[in-house]
Length: 358
Image (cartoon, rainbow, N blue to C red; front, side, top):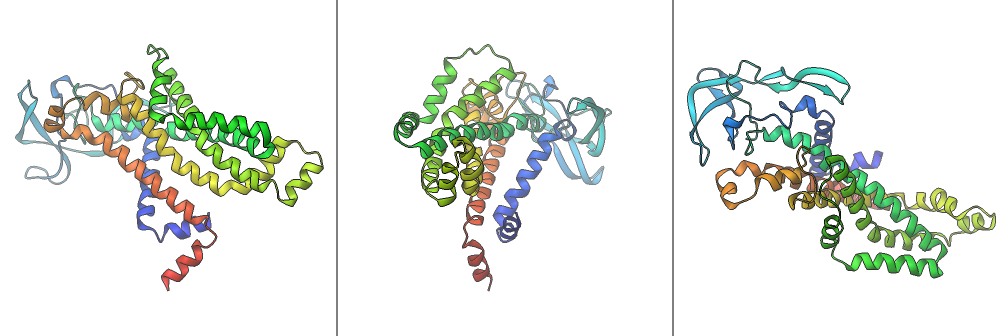
């Protein structure tokens, strides 16, 4: 951990990525407080409303505020600014009542415009039903960001189990597990995911869809890691302390998990960091194609699917691309952190850092 922060201070891009990920996961955990509205809160009179926040007006001076807009064309949803119509944005403003984590009743939000405002707050614009896009992105992060950790946990558990058994026992066990893993690797991952999801019922609630998607992504993602772990286990089991444990009659599973796996902890940590974006993108792809999360649940993939439907939408309402920007930034942040971790666990990395700073 000390080496991680040592290297993090010398990698500005990795530091920025680390801060971004912390902020995203904090917002995810405090979604009810951070988001000014619930994900289902709708303002039908303001479909495809552009972002309406600003920092200066002649009426209110400097400070965060919203600008009033009026619809001038309800077919293409064109808006015009209303001169003199502004409302301040306040911190810890009262808004929709909610229960934080489903337990603590509250009505204060991180920011808002208050009940007296004639216009809703659209930090990042609205969707086709007038729902606040920022609020939906924050709530959607609960699925899109958590599925990465849950998926990689299941996937790495399978990889460690099957890869460890293949590397430790060798012979027929090794041959069978590796042939099965190669079968999955040879099939293009996206097509396999789409096939497995399409044969299941679409009439599932959001909780069932979430679990099914997680299991599918984990089932598809374990073979590559299993082959890596198999090779390392095959090498480590030849060490004297492992041979002594075998001679003492310690069960193979205990040897794998208590003595061999700790020797590979650095590789496993790097694999986890680099593997999480794949699960996030997998959920996004399924939701974008209508095979993943659907209303009333919300994820970044479902937001992209729902709003980025035509070139006309992209041209007239470019803010609907915002969920894709969050997805891109998150994916890049995990990759930069993964690259940093890979270097941190390199025994010569600290020497190279010290040499470069001289």
